Image (cartoon, rainbow, N blue to C red; front, side, top):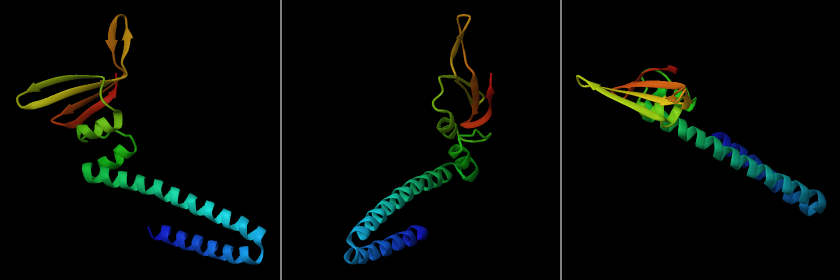
Length: 139
């Protein structure tokens, strides 16, 4: 935020100087004003994009914690992450196989569906136990 304010002040100063030059030397001043306005618009757009990335990172860290939030941001699976974090990294599974034994809920998620000898197969899997990732990999 502080850098944005400094950049904004510098650009505003340059525009003010350009107006003075415009009065003294109209063709040169007009060109400088156009360049200053373009620079100002570029700074605003770039700061807007960086704020969105920062807000998303902050939101993911608040939701899943430092380690898992950073992993989601980097599209990386980490053992122990919540199943919703897995969903954000890999997308919705194409097939889910559910099982429950003695109060332990297990889900096996599959992605990368393909047909092989009239059988449906998958390329990737993840095992979720009590809403936490315990295993993942290629099949």
